[in-house]
Each structure stands twice: as structure tokens, then as C-alpha cells.
Length: 132
Picture 1 (cartoon, helix red, strand yellow):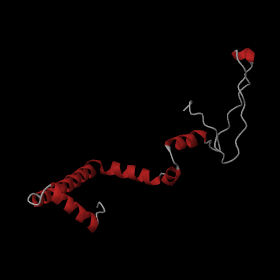
Picture 2 (spheres, helix red, strand yellow; picture 1 turned 90 degrees about the vertical axis):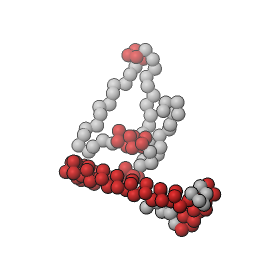
Picture 3 (cartoon, rainbow, N blue to C red; picture 1 turned 180 degrees about the horizontal axis):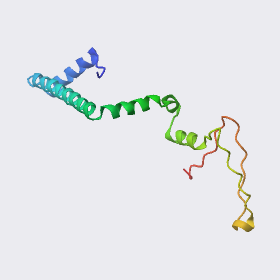
Picture 4 (tube, rainbow, N blue to C red; picture 1 turned 45 degrees about the vertical axis):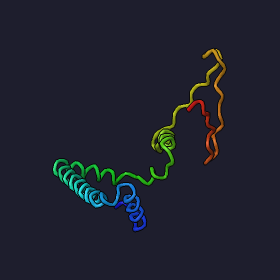
């Protein structure tokens, strides 16, 4: 369950001998075994009661989650990358946004905004650390 090998178990026993002491180590081991059994019993009972109460609904949620394209999400490196990809993706059947009218100095009281060239495919846009 936890991936504890023989070497790790031996180290735990040696550390237990020094920390707990040889006279209290058997009682501590019994307590650990009883606690593990109790936790396993509690989780089994909770799972059975959840299945009894919400069985069909939980199966529907599991089916929906199984249908999600999770592989696409696993390839993303960060939540920012996920949000950027989602916000910048445009479905094929959606018309593109209309180009805004260029602002002039008379309209806004300031200089017109700078226009940026589109980036080549795969290039990363510059990042302004003060803006994020």
C-alpha cells in the first residue's frame, strides 16, 4: 500500500527501538495494527454507505469524468497555460471578432494604441511581470 520495502521496514524498527524503547515497541506495533484495521473498516463502511445513498448519481459522475479528454489537460504545465489555451481558442464555426475602429487622439485624448505584429507559430509572447 505505501511501498515499504524490507530495508525501510528495518530502518523503522531500528528507529522505533531507539525512540520508543524495546519494552514499549510491541505495544506500539499492536496499536498501529489496530489503528490500521479501524481506518480500513471506517473507509469501507463509508464507501458502502455512499454507494447505497448515491450509487446511481456517483456512477453518472464517473461516466462523465471518464468521457473527458483528460490527456489534453495532463499535457498542460500550469493553470495559466490552461486558461490561456481556453481563452484564446476559437471554435471553427464561430465568426471572428470584428476589428475595432482605430482610436485617435481626438477620441480618447491620448495617443492611439500601438499595434503588435502577430507572433509566428510556436513563439511565446513577451511577458510583462508587473502586469501579472
